Every structure is written in structure tokens, then in C-alpha cells.
Image 1 (cartoon, rainbow, N blue to C red):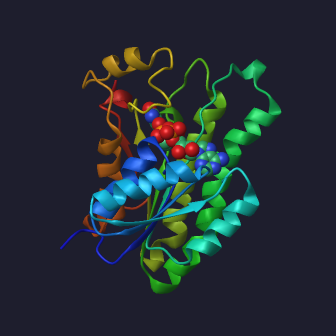
Image 2: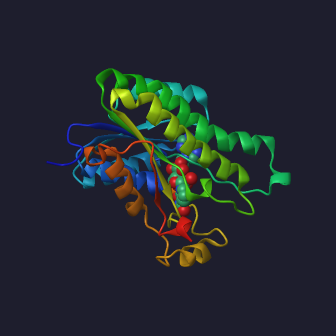
Length: 242
Ligand code: NAD
């Protein structure tokens, strides 16, 4: 039997990169996967990939920077067994040059959307005493970098939410964990200065692939991780170990 047979999952930011790989992986393991993102044609591409892999997928358009969209998304998707808060943006700026708007965008997408989506969907998990939430944070939440302070803070906030929610929902059997990726070869980041240098500096001397993050998310979402909650699993080629 597949790991997520008869389960329903929602993956945010699943129109590209890591989110798309997670959506396909969860569907391969039997989940019906709700894919969300801003662009319908890209959402359709993810659903097509899910169907090609023999799974079932649905797309719901939502801009999670918009809090009304977050509420509508939660209503449209209804109860889920697995929630993956993956949508994220990473505009980098030195702190003295950070605009207020940019600051609020990063926290709006990376933290507020995950917060209120979880607030809307966790009660049903608690009521049926079953559910798994996985936050895709980043090793950037555990280290300092010369630029990217807002992004780093947003990812540390996600890990803090992971620990808080693990405590808040644990008695109901709802598990909450983070996967903290290191350098992962997605279109969004391979063009960034330093990406290749950072990848080669990892103990595994290479960038990770989106599918390798999807495996970590699948593990934490599944009953195989039944005694794991409040954990931040670095999937980073050993980056934070250096
Ligand atoms: P990506 O840009 O391909 O993925 C981010 C997804 O979030 C996209 O599908 C994007 O459309 C979506 N998104 C952004 N703003 C949105 C909004 N307002 N409404 C709805 N969707 C929105 O990049 P990725 O590399 O796949 O990153 C996925 C996640 O992994 C992010 O949270 C990122 O911070 C995290 N991460 C990535 C890396 C890496 O090296 N690639 C490393 C650490 C953490």
C-alpha cells in the first residue's frame, strides 16, 4: 500500500520548483493533491505531471500574499490530511536598503500565509485527531548571510511556528515539522550569484534536487514519521554542519 493512500493534501507554491516536486511525490504515494499558486497555466502543468504519474491533482488559483485569497483557498480546499506550506519569495537586499513594502511581502508570503492557512485547516485535523503539517523553511533561518536578513528572519519564524504548533496540536495527534533545504537547483535560484559556490561548499559538494526535498517532506508527512513532531530536518547536503 502506498504511504498516503486515501489522503488529501494541499501544497502551496506548487506551480514550480520544490513545490511542484512535492505535489507530484505526494500524489505518487496515493494522496489526492490540491495544488495552489498564482498562475493557472503553471498549475495545470503540475496537475498534468501528477496525472502522468498516475495520481489525482486539482489546481486552485490563489495569491497567498493576499489574505483574502488565503481564506478563500482554505474554504475551497476544505479538510486536508496533509498541509505543506511551501510558497516562498526570496528577494535579497542589504538591511539599510530594505523597503517596507519588500519586508511586508516577504513576511506576507513566507509567514503570514502559512500562519493563517494553518489556522484555518488545523482545527479539522485536531477534530479528527489526524494530520501532518510540513513547513518548507530554509537553512537560511539558522545562519547569517551578508544580504537576505528579512528572508532569513522569515524562515526562522517558520521554524518557530513549527515548534509552537507541534506543542499546540500534539495532544490531538497532529504533527508539525519543517524541512529546511540548503541550495536546491530550481529555476528560481540557479542564476543567483554564489549558488554554485555554496553548492560546491556543502559536504556533499553539489546542489540538491527538488525531488530530494520532496522525499524529506513525504517522510515527515507520512506515518513513517509517527513519533516526529516539532523537528527541523535540514535537507542541505550537510551545509549547516560546516
Ligand atoms: P520557486 O520560486 O520555484 O517556488 C516558490 C513558489 O512559491 C513558486 O511556485 C511561486 O509561484 C510561489 N509563490 C510565491 N509567491 C506567491 C504568492 N504570492 N502566492 C502564491 N504562490 C506564491 O522556488 P523554490 O526554490 O522551489 O522554493 C520553494 C520553497 O523552498 C520556498 O519557500 C523557498 O524559500 C524554499 N527554499 C528554496 C531553496 C532553494 O535553494 N531553491 C533553499 C531553501 C529554501
